[in-house]
Image (cartoon, one colour):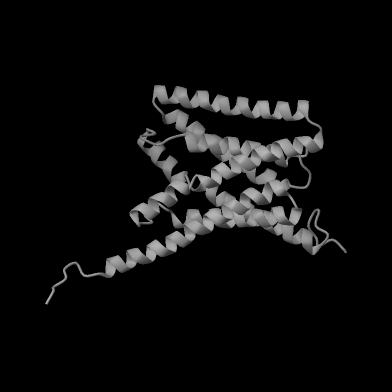
Length: 238
């Protein structure tokens, strides 16, 4: 079959695979820019207040591990996983740097040490995977690390799901963030399936399921909130 006009795309299977990866990158970008209001507030107030740097440090490590998995040193043919995680790592590093710049002395030191720890751990993963494994075992080793990392990341909204069920309110569940995560996970699930890459489609399949659960909860409790709002403030019994 003749090329369809895109680099490395020579069939409709390749086109679908390429399209799923591009869509996944787009929705991932939405997730990456979602903390911008938080950091605008930090810069405006000149303080990190009660915000925590941990989500950004963990996301940085996750992006670095997944980026390493997608590079030719470890895997072939998953370039769109490499691009999204390279961009993600840059965003998380920028957020962490802003956090350090505006944190108080004690918090600044703690976050700086943790950031150094993230890079040391990533360096250790790179060294072990290159020094102790040939290419195929290396892909398996780093692949399982990326699966564990992604599943932990996708499981992090479980606390929000618990809070929504407990409070019967979607106040703390941003709809567009949940939607973007669901669509990103679904896109990379399709990308992994089309590539027959277990290490991509398993964690993203779990992420898709968790994302759909969030959206269903949002729809259910959002409806309940509207019905509650329409009730009269005073009820007269006769």
